[in-house]
Image (cartoon, rainbow, N blue to C red; front, side, top):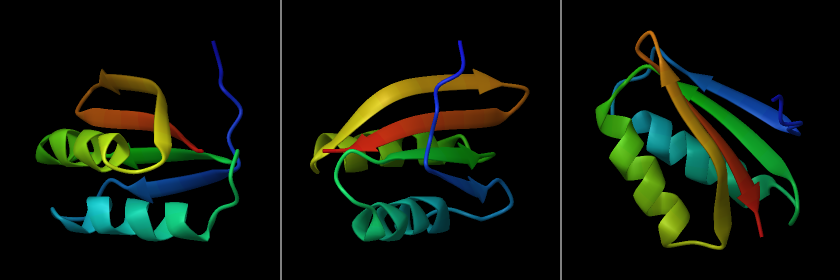
Length: 77
């Protein structure tokens, strides 16, 4: 199943905590209801992004991991 998204953020080659910071910055610029796809290659980022979503008006629509890639689909509420 493919989920439509408005913006894709590829932070596969960024060291922690940069993926989380860039995710927050991007979500801050988006309108409510928009969906962000985040792709990271840093496993430690998974917990940080989950915490970011839990503590802000965002919804984690989908999460998947495969071949050292971690993909989040996040909706801004």
